[in-house]
Amino acid sequence: MVRIKDIAKAANVSPATVSRCLNKDPSLSISTETGKRIYEIALSMGYAKVKALDKSEEFLVIHKEDHFHDHVDNGYYFSIRSGIEEIIAKNGDICRFVSISKLEAEDKAYSGVIVIGNYRPSDIEHIKKLVCNDNIVFVGKLNFYPECFDTVTYNVNLCVHLALNAIREKGYTQLLFLDGTDHYQIPRDFLKITHVRNYLELHQDLTLKEYLECDGFGFDAGYRTMKEYLDRTKDPIPQAIFAATDPIGIGVIKALSEAHIAVGKDVHIISMNGSNACTLITPTLTSVDYHSREMGKEAALLVKENVRKQERVPKCISFAPRIIEGGSL
Image (cartoon, rainbow, N blue to C red; front, side, top):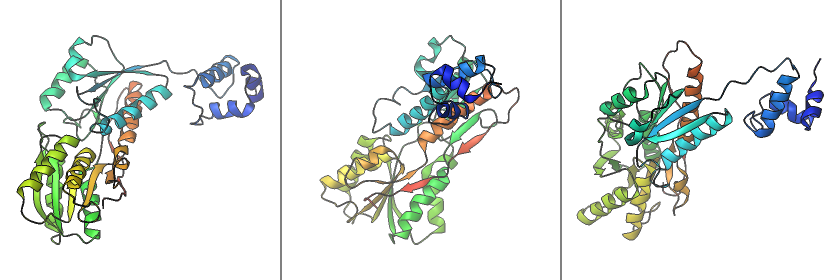
């Protein structure tokens, strides 16, 4: 009978290392060079507790042109991407990132497809037609075909409620809300402003002084919109500001600082995503974290899992959000 120490001797590693590998210790997965060697030796020696490794799969990841241009504005997408890449590498698979504009040039068959971000229904039809694959996992705010494909998302309503609860708990009574304009025909129930207004109907001690629509979702859009608001308004600024994305919130802080308005003292800000960029400014930005890296990891796990399934029920997965506290609130 083959023993752990026999495999360890053949692989020139310690028995503990063999045990960790074959018991799938996450710190030594079979995707590492050492892990693969141990696994192959155990298999060749006839160790009873291992089976042949699955063959490597190749997956296509579709994104928009600008998703990976800027680490601050696109921290959400970079985080999703890093989660996807971590799981793909751990499984010994391969993934190819392709923007939707270059999708027509793809003529290769893939084991599955991950679609990052929000798209118009016509864009989704375009993707479905070109990839010719029913193993599609959407990761982002919504999927227009949840009855057909898996979705990894975040609960917009819950995230908005967490943010507004935090504002009310501080005793603030007036609110300024900033979000980017929708250009993707997103259903009303997936728009953050919908859930802001629904919340305020139930909690009338907090009022929305103004809803500011930005011309984008990034730092510059938040900065310009806040600067324009400060230039035109004669009323006192509301006590609390809710920015729909971290980059918008960072832009808001810059505009307020230039106007000599002290964030965290004269005005208080919370945003959404929980990206690392929130810690790089002063004061640090309080944010609702909906675990974008975990979203990417889960999308990669789902697309891999679906390869072997003959029949499956489409899933919709989200993670419980949390507030990352900063000095801005």
